[in-house]
Length: 69
Image (cartoon, one colour):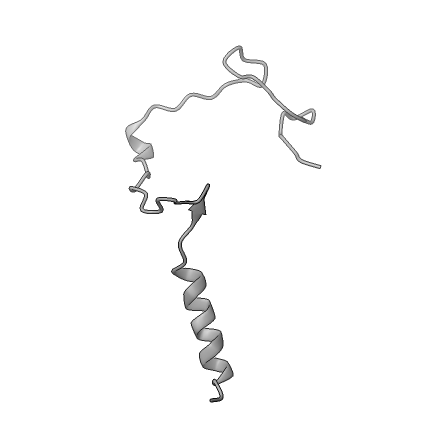
């Protein structure tokens, strides 16, 4: 029996979308709750690059923007 290439492709794509994720041999939960926040409901602060509240880890340029090699 010959399988239609288009049907085989669609079936493969559907399998990718609906596949289970295994982590250490156990099914990993993928039904996460909505984690969006209402940004207008908060008072945001801006800090200078040398503020005590900030700690820089890794590689930084002179503008304190991180980068990866």
